Image (tube, rainbow, N blue to C red; front, side, top):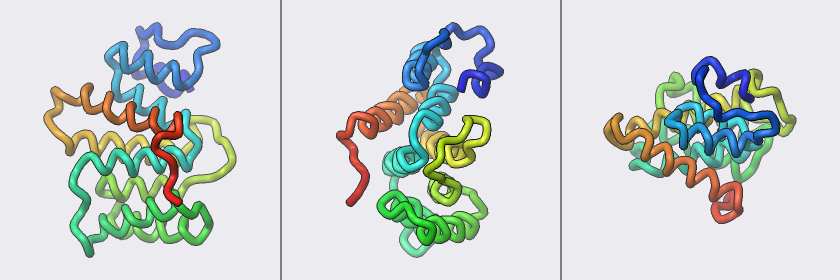
Length: 171
């Protein structure tokens, strides 16, 4: 994981041998590198957790208007979290493509479309990258750029709720 983030934070001492992805994410956020902290968190999750996290972060803003391609993409992402199957992944693929991948909701659907149950090296985990992109885009919609670190902390909190089970997958 560190090899993916190191170019963005070359002087960081966030990574020490034996550091878990979760510890790395916290250290990066505390060290003033919120973008990299969010990326580390996206990669620390399973793909299903990463998509769920992206969906939960999308709830920080008003949902897209009903009947729009973005609303369909968001529904497809959430449906895949609930039913992580080939059919729902295929629906997410179509829904994300219909938006030209041009919104956080579409990126959440793209994350679902690319998800696998198999662990992948961080550099090859396209699903985690799409989930991270969705979170980054939604945080930019939440408010002023100067408050980005605060909003990144809120997104990290949502992630921790997924990890500790207080924000479970839908049934």
